[in-house]
Length: 538
Image (cartoon, helix red, strand yellow):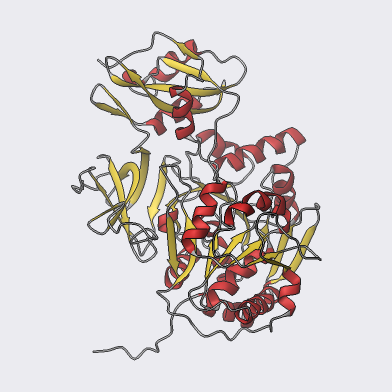
């Protein structure tokens, strides 16, 4: 028997129509580069998005064509998030912090003909521009500029964003594209090799946004005020912009700067109730608040964090301000948040797999392991908003029997709760046994003289590998203090005998500890290593 339901494709054109007709009165706030704030409503955003889509269509952008964005968390970028997919084209969000060669290769691979550039990032784009000259780019659109701006080495037409919008009509009646067609193209951060592209479908973006609105997930609704302290190019701002527009939740955008001087005033003055970002964001904001003697943000009830280990001390410090912490796990390949924890639950647990996705643990050879909460293995995942392949890569690259290999090691219990213990590439094989770096880092970080830490493997003539702890040290730190501190927290043979001090840990473009850079520093002899008489494997 066939159903009696109407056929109605899911996608961004449907979301644009919803914003125009239903959630248009929702406020939108954005920090401006000059320190002020832009204020508007989602309805205005929808009208301008319609103009942008119509203007691009008149400029020859057709179904399946690619428009790149080199932009921040701004209203204009949000308009492009609606306009470009709604008209059937593909928005390719460029990670502005990647190397120019990588960015040029991405633009060439996607075949983009148009690039939208945030005027506040024009100087950074000028560095990249000469590398794009051999590609298909024919038009550059610059926001916040009254007059056209030219970029040396890229001899193509440039136009101001507002001037382009004048060319279009404020349409919101865009027909639905094929829900399985690409809507957004995003690349991984390249921490394990060259960045790889993920082409999100209209359907996948819609389903993931709905998932974030459910009560067991983030529970986003019209009363929520969201500050996504996440660049839009990082997994579509973790999916939060689309979820907010779907629910009619007020969005507070940080613009180009994700520093406490911008974020803390937004928390305090815009009634933010839910905020999201990597742990370093919340550590920096907390330190700045303490230094300035600021009280708790008046309306903030919950922060969502992930992408890196979340220290217990950070959860406790925000908890003392009356703010709960919610952990989440996800990847570019899984449209971001795919396992979400209960607020201020177990920090070591990444969360519970959201409805619609399936997860398993397996050996590196692909043999499934029991979901008993004890047996560690590689986490593998599948579902309607998980990629089935990489853009223009071999179909089997990174997959096993239809499951995405995440590269994360962890456990899974019978109720779908995920606990991460390491990355496959970061675990330390010592004397034939694995030492997981994440719990070891958490144990070291719990010492009051340790401000930050990362653990990597260093070669050992007897044990093949031993842990090396790279520490950002506070007052009173000494490696000799650590064995006694760690003995009650981890197995004796996990305790590092080798320590190195850094002023700060190198970070990736999305704020994660950059262990590739740390391993390079070790290999190049750039670390001053202190050795103590710690335990080695029995």
